[in-house]
Amino acid sequence: MAEQNRTKLTGHITVPGDKSISHRSIIFAAISTGVTTIDNFLKSADCLSTMQAFKDLGVKIDERDGQVVVTGVGLKGLTQSNQPLDMGNSGTSTRLITGLLAGQDFDSTLVGDASLSKRPMARVTDPLSQMGADFTNTENHLPLTVFGRSLHEIHYRLPVASAQVKSAIILAALQATGNTVIEEPTASRDHTERMLAAFSPASIDREDHKITIHPGHPLIAQHVTVPGDISSAAFWLVAGAIVPGSSITIENVGINQTRTGILSVLQQMGAQLSIQERPQANEETEPSADITITASALKPFEIGAEEIPALVDEVPLLALLAARADGVSRITGAEELRFKESDRLAVVAEEFRKLGIAIEELPDGFVIDGHKSWQVQNTDLDSHQDHRIAMALKIASLLVPEDVTIRDFNAVNISYPSFLADLQRLRS
Ligand SMILES: O=C(O)C1=C[C@@H](OP(=O)(O)O)[C@@H](O)[C@H](O)C1
Ligand SMILES: C=C(OP(=O)(O)O)C(=O)O
Image 1: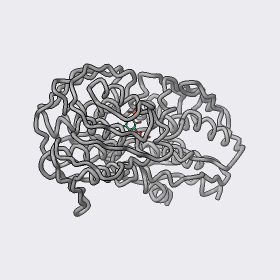
Image 2 (image 1 turned 120 degrees about the horizontal axis):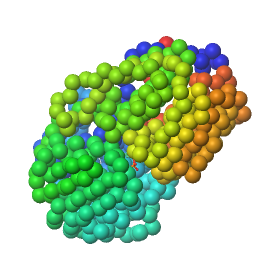
Image 3 (image 1 turned 180 degrees about the horizontal axis):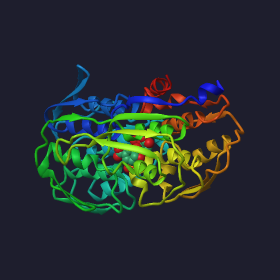
Image 4 (image 1 turned 180 degrees about the vertical axis):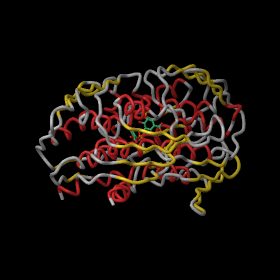
């Protein structure tokens, strides 16, 4: 088994569709008029939660020839669900749908699994309440009942860079009586803005870190092509960089610049990386590229609050990269990681220490010494039911001779159901 763990990874791979864009494709398709077709929709547990929620809200969604086909009902055409909407494990579904439901003329209740029920919701209910929204509880957690209300505009400066909060406000603002302005401290992923611009160009203006939403314009069905998820590609980028002898090409990866922080870090580390951009239909379409990574020596790196939004879901993997770099790396400004599917700062530190990695947990990040060779202490690893932790630990385990087990590994179904099959493909 020791030999198999260390097998180099080689070949070409295509990762599944982007999770953030897949959620948004269903949401915008549902509230537009006409039939939207979606190519390369991510059929993972999180995106299926969004799909089921819209079915429960009266939207017809079918699958035909590998495409998802959504018959839009318009912004005022959703109907009350006769059961609570089950958001499963998905923070994105919960926060975006809360924004949309706040302005409907019926009430809805949102529920989720144990992890989601611990995640903070005041970050969306606070600004939405300022717009006139009304909720059962101000307890900050699911379950949450959203009372449909008439909404008015706000001018809102996000206290933290969060695409989910920004998107919740955008979806509420489409139903408000006046124009809403949203300002961000640092740019977070802009998939909602791009998709709204495609479905309804007159509804949105963007300028630097300022977004203006103009309600009252029609949303028209589109054809959406979802690029590969860079947050899933990131596992192969890191594996390709650190497993000796590896060389991996990942085809059709989304390279929206609000998501490519991991590529910048790899470049900063001196990784052997080549990025071939694919032709883009227009400015608002999501850009994509074929990316090749080849294992090489890596320099340590430092990142802080400014860099975090563009790589927020990749921080566990960056910690792994740091653990193979030639020196001490520092990640700060990442306190948001404590509010994800698990407390990712605490969990990464705990699990990496089992592998003998020299990692110090900070309140907002890590200091990691890549010089120290790993001395495995404990082979019983735990994903803490967090998909990104499960996959990061699996990649880490490729570098140790011991057999390790990863508890609740099936959490990968949240974002990347074919992860193990893809690993197998790159090994053979
Ligand atoms: O809007 C989105 O699709 C997402 C936004 C990010 O969360 P925050 O908005 O909380 O930063 C990210 O961590 C999450 O995986 C997906
Ligand atoms: C944080 C994540 O997702 P969500 O917030 O949608 O649960 C993630 O996919 O890493």
